[in-house]
Length: 509
Ligand SMILES: Cc1cc2nc3c(=O)[nH]c(=O)nc-3n(C[C@H](O)[C@H](O)[C@H](O)COP(=O)(O)O)c2cc1C
Image (cartoon, rainbow, N blue to C red):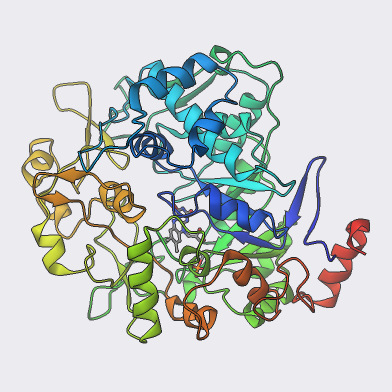
């Protein structure tokens, strides 16, 4: 069998293909596991993972997976408490989900414990029954849950951490400290804070968790959109960076904004130009492995990445709509039908996400991409992962989000114009994976994000109804559908890359 990895440091190996992290719970443990079992890197989403766990428990955890993984958590009392509070053996029966408190710098231990447990569960399930590698993806912008989520993933033996949507400069040092079982303090980002203001620190002490052996430090791969950012992270991060995901603005999810003064096309999409092209010679000169992401959806484009000196590629869109994806079955079917009929359309919206980053929204019937569905939704902010901390005029710290009810946002000093066209990504993305809240007015609508290359899913369908994660791997590695995903014909890499890989892998005969 041809191996698909080579050695990285003492204990991790470099994959050729990374299935990108896709939140919320699109890249769940099932998808990541399916990819890892083909010998490539499967990545679970760690975004809002506490919400995902408690809602799955309230849906009755029908196959018992959550409870099985919870039983392995090193602090049984925490797992027991969460079970007692949220598990409903017969499910919710269409009743609203019981909520969890929104995160703030005042988070109590119970909120941190839930994050640690939830990340542990997701990674444990993704790693079950194989010796492949699993990563976890987090958004840098979602600051408060990050450290407990990382620790939970590390307790389950996560191999890689991948983070974008911001500059994760402090994360390498955080991973070092967690691996040494040392307490971590991070400074909360507070909008409008003056130098004299007292800024709260977020504190997490891993020693509250009674574990017999310290967890291993995973490899860290920041997601960048420019060689400049990669250079800053390689030189100025507070610990080691093991490589980079270099993401083009064609990729699904959030994108980096264009450089310089923004300009827009006739439908409001940001325009990217020459300055947004990553200088791959500069990336190679950094001497660290890198993976190219965004539209790497054919064997030819994978091969091009190798020819450009990349270690491999990261792919999201093709995996997002495969059988093992976390997207609710009816929504996934709606996307596949849209693609099959050639009617797919993906908007790069500069308004949708309250992070302020461009966010891709695919047009799918019944979702927030439709004006009527968007207008019919009553604004409510009760999950709050994307809220920003701000300095209150009279002192103290408040939280606000331009996706919340307009009057609330304005009362907190926000600018009303910032609210126009914003989606509630927290509620929308939870609904996309079948975990949407039920309101008096009905169920929360979902929202589908995808790369510009959604049409490439047609190739995967190729007269079939559906396709699997292994089919995606086979396709990208240049093999025929149905062939083994781990042994799929000519390797797409350049001969130089190939021989490097083979030299590093005596296993690969
Ligand atoms: C449905 C979906 C959700 C995504 N969510 C995230 C996310 O939560 N965090 C992240 O870093 N990237 C996210 N991405 C980006 C992917 O990890 C990956 O980098 C990207 O999809 C690669 O480009 P492609 O879509 O053209 O394959 C998402 C992509 C998709 C399609």
